[in-house]
Length: 156
Image (tube, rainbow, N blue to C red; front, top):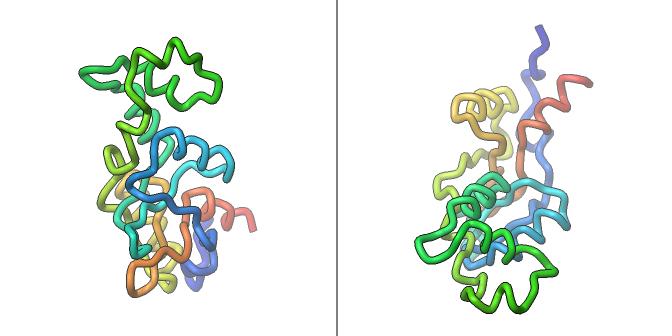
């Protein structure tokens, strides 16, 4: 049975210098950040750079699919597109009405750089999530450990 080496820590498997977003980030900007950086999630940080949440592609898609009482779901998908027509968008308010703070997860899994990779894997599995935010003592993000980061160590 393959297991993670007992001495592997978050700092050994994490992606350093994670791309972060702010709570006020619009859905269009968030979609662009995910695409440009080829990531599927990001820590959400406050004005002091401390982690206050996490947002993922799944959160974004779920939010867009829900729509709102005043807007059809298709509007939010159109709001993220670069080539929307002025006529089509004129009937709806600006896309900034929805931002990351409206649908982020406020209680992300935060771990220390010294936490064992095996413990992180257990936490991810138990919570049925795919990423842990590695933070310093002041909750500033220093890395992200994803389920793929952990899986990559099985093949080594």
